[in-house]
Image (cartoon, rainbow, N blue to C red; front, side):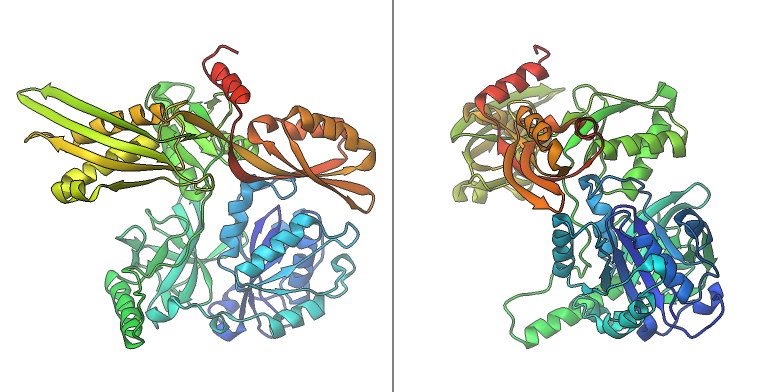
Length: 593
């Protein structure tokens, strides 16, 4: 039989931490604390919504002795006495891009996975891609025929998990071995509790974690004290003194730790691990050297594609709103909050319409703050079309001090596939400048990359070469940065600004009788059809379409198909806008259209 730890997004994932212990009775929560590591299975149950994820999980709990009766999903959620990690997402949109990160950060702490497919609906394209993604994470997968609703195949599934999926000590984590018996853990989820503050979920990879102890966060380069250590069993939290490798724990008291951070026992422990790694590298005469920090790979957070302003009902609520947004950002790394330099407004940046809507709702529901959202806007990018050279001089007197600096620089367009920016100094210039001045110049360039010459969106695909910098004695670093930024803006404008728009990969599954109106609507949205496939009685439309044209698409699709269609969106690339569309956008942003 088995103990199950549960972690869910309604889209496609349930995460389990199995403990294989013999018992015919419903298990005591305290009876399963710190089992032998060989008896643990950290696995995920992957499934499209309504494909049987929850039903399968419920049967696994029942046949392994953790529940006494079988029931519906709501009853199951209330009743199950299992270790839980709730990811605060409840939605029914298939494979929604807004919440990819929710799934990926749970996958990060798994050692194995079981895929559940609804055989009556056929295997969909996104499901195949999802499984490939899992394989790329080196997670063992297990396929077995079962009919959970009729209690068939569940026992063989449990036996197969025991036999074929690895225990934590059977997984090879190269980086973790350098810590030996010292603590090494990954923070993969943060939630905020009104009474206890931030609760951080961690997967322990080596050593053990103890309550009332200090831990060192490699990513934040700081030490924090963990006040309490808990085992989460659904809505019950059992306080424990310590927990060993292979387990998932809930910590109280870590104020600075965020998703993706690596936690070790001390700074000295981290340094010792680095020395062990470097020593082996030297003994093997390796040309590669380990980095100065042995941190576990966190979660790659995509850049937001939508943004809007958010305002509190009164100025008196501004501080409360800032607190709420800080809490939500710690929970959700894909949520970004910034302040508009021109208007002073707070800007909310997210992965999609649904993402921002849910954040808005949570601020009202959990923090009791009524907020107003501005119009939803697309996060464009900018680049340049050609090369250009610019020179600028800043001569300013502040108080009794005169600041004089002259800058000359070139900007060049990188290859179309480049999504980053670069900068370099001419060798002669680099040797003439002090480290402090070089840093000020770099800050000025990076600042200019944040606001492009056309609409003020971030710049990508540009290389800057610093040709000349001269300054008089006493000129401050801030003035050097300001001059460089002003010169950069001049050069970018001379090079001809180009707006890049996010283009999405769209997949629509629709009955054949509704295909024509869906195609006609897509044509009006500047969409490009890539393929139309058949899937049993349905058609699957694959297309690319600018994100700006997809506002409110779910509502329109529901109307066009009488609710008989599903769709998924995923960011494909940023593409240059044609001249006509860019002019329309410029007029719209200027309030002329």
